[in-house]
Image 1 (cartoon, rainbow, N blue to C red):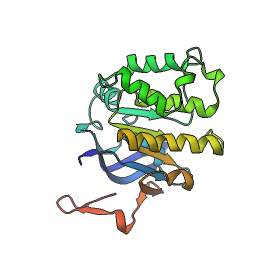
Image 2 (tube, helix red, strand yellow):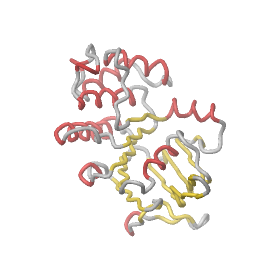
Image 3 (tube, rainbow, N blue to C red):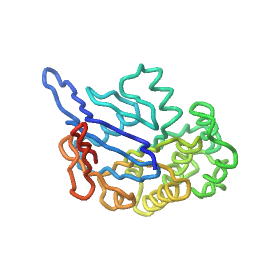
Image 4 (spheres, rainbow, N blue to C red):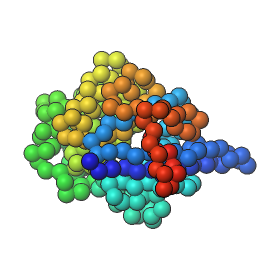
Length: 239
């Protein structure tokens, strides 16, 4: 099975006045196609910064990111935006649905803006069935619960069959019941469609739905003996 993502020695430094703050201190990750990776750590550990860099929303200070065979970390902004639209789906804590459009309208906008030629009507209908949204397609966000809105956001992120789905605290605004539903839906997308997923969370129960866990602390990955591999040629530790 091929690598769908490879990040090599990612570092990110911010300047706060005259002070430099290191958000990432050399993070390397390899992800196989079809994996569901949970990244867990306390607030401020660098996990959101890492996700934004992996998704091409931010550039690292140094290091390299390759998504499905395409390097995104050093290319021009326009090229990176194109790769992001074709290869990456995003789900955030806030649902970010357009309030004046129905669920169906929000999905159609995503098809038009982020279409990569991979999505088709049969796939879209299958996603809607899997997420339990068949009866909600004509509803606006104000007519749906938080859990339903997040499921629409997930559908929007995967209808064009992205190479990888990045989820940033997707249950952060949900109660326990809706959180479990959304997490189960992500698991089903992973199992049924072999969707590669990286989800960041601070919640151990949410992290447990993935099939691999990466822990972060102080801008670094916390190594565990069972999931560390060494690239002898580059002398790099991959998690």
